[in-house]
Amino acid sequence: MRFLIIDDDVDSADVLETFLTQNGHEAVKALSAGDGMEAFRSGNFDAVFLDIVLPDRNGIDLLKEIKKTSQDTPVVMVTGFKDAENVVNAFREGAFDCLLKPFNYEYLKSDIIGRIPLKKK
Image 1: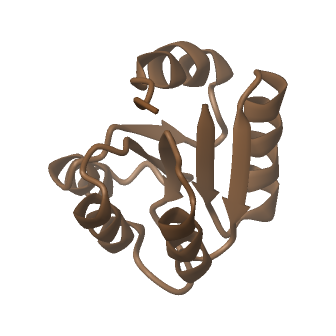
Image 2: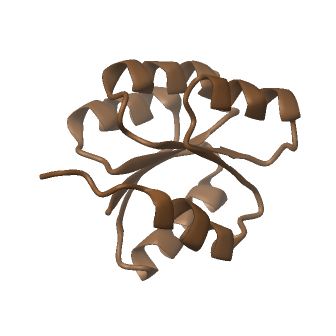
C-alpha cells in the first residue's frame, strides 16, 4: 500500500514512515498542510495519515478538502491531544479512524492498516 503522512512533527512522521516501510508499504511525508495537499493531488495513495493540528491549516479543514477531492480515500486522523471534540468532528467529516500519539503499533497494524481496502488498479 502507498500512504501519505501529513504531520508537522518530524519525529512522529519519521516514526510512522519507518513503521510503514518496515511492514512493506510505501510512505510519502509532508510536513505542512500545503505540501500535503500538493502531494495528495499528485500521487495515488491508498490512505492518508493526517495530523489534526498543523501550523498552516486545521487538519479537519484539510480532511474536508481531501474528501471533496477523493471521497473513497481513507483518512486516519493523528493527534497527540486527547481532545474528544476534535476526534468527533473528524469522524463527522468522514475520517476512517483516529490514531493517538504515541502510536500503538499493534492497533495501527491490525485495526487500521488491516481494514483499509485495496484500491482497484
